[in-house]
Image (cartoon, rainbow, N blue to C red; front, top):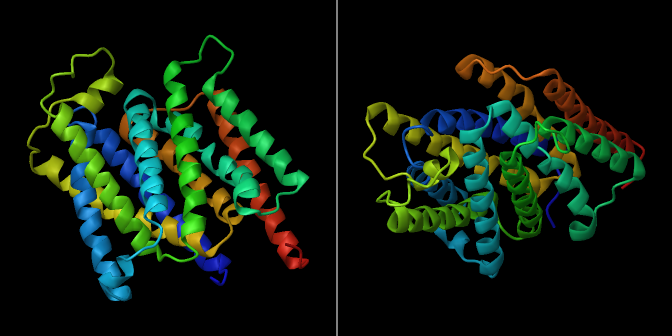
Length: 310
């Protein structure tokens, strides 16, 4: 049985989320030039190398033996789907809007932790989750003439990501965070190589839409700046994969989830600094609703723990 450590789990989550936010900036910066599968391949090779070093120091490669290969495969495919879908959205939308829509994921994690993990979520937290979803609806423009089909992409990514973190809690009972990161990296490797083999010549890149072009664009040898940025992505991917796996491994999902909202103000900052993107009034209200509901869930959880409730 893994001893719960909320302070360490929260610290790991914050570190992983910051790394993820910076990586989003780098990938969005590269998206007009290089295909997504090429960026993911280089990132995966670097991240996998670094993660194998961590495994070596944590006890050796014997740790990679597992009795749960199917769960590792499903988890890897889920996070690969989440990544691919979100990065296509990132190429189509302002970074703050894509991040905000994606961050329905922590709300989904809290909700899914009830039937899947058996964790308790009281009515106050359900109300906070509902308010957070109202923020997502407001930001996406669902039901108005401002709604765009691309808004579905971050939400689909969020669902896949939430499922990934629930599986992380199940696998984390027996597997180290570094081991889970290695198996995830192997799945990413096969997925990106598969895309490179099947569409890497760019023959399908003329399909209408910048999102599909980002996915299907022809492979090209990166220049110095592109190569450096892809390698940086690998370092960031190693950090976020290990830290988030560790966070969900040692702490309840409904404690960790609210801290992932840190990415929302970061996304606004990056969008303004690098692309002169300023969210509209509705988007800002949505961010307040989402962030506020997440903070409430955390504060309520801590108050229950202080009173000795589970």
